[in-house]
Image 1 (cartoon, rainbow over the protein chains, first blue to last red):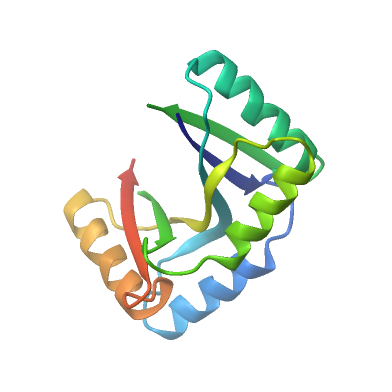
Image 2: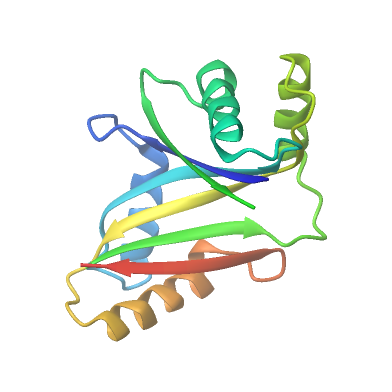
Amino acid sequence: MKARITVTLKSGVLDPQGKAIEGALHGLGFADAANVRQGKIIEMKLDETNEAAARARVEDMCRKLLANPVMENYSIEISA
Amino acid sequence: MKARITVTLKSGVLDPQGKAIEGALHGLGFADAANVRQGKIIEMKLDETNEAAARARVEDMCRKLLANPVMENYSIEISA
């Protein structure tokens, strides 16, 4: 199965990278771009063929390595 | 409108960050995680209320700043 994990900063957390992108967009004339936030996306293949089991496994990966639950939210999409 | 841009490395391009995550996952016992790739996601709000116009504007941002079309693919989702 394939998994796609989206990791985003929680809404109260300062996002300097997003601010930098916002500043650069304003400088290029895109003055209406607001609330720019940057996150990351991680894609992988898993041998697991059961969707629920694959999701549980990826949840475990997120808790142990991929996301920092203090500052970040994550969402998981599993596809065949 | 809200825009979400997903930027991923093209498939032939070496992804050292993805490789590092893959190595760390293997070290944690997730031996079946393969083809790990990392990309980025950028979210923003726009004043534009027309979906097609918003999409065209974000396309323009991608070409000018957000993505490197030589090495990266991008996809755009627009929502209200």
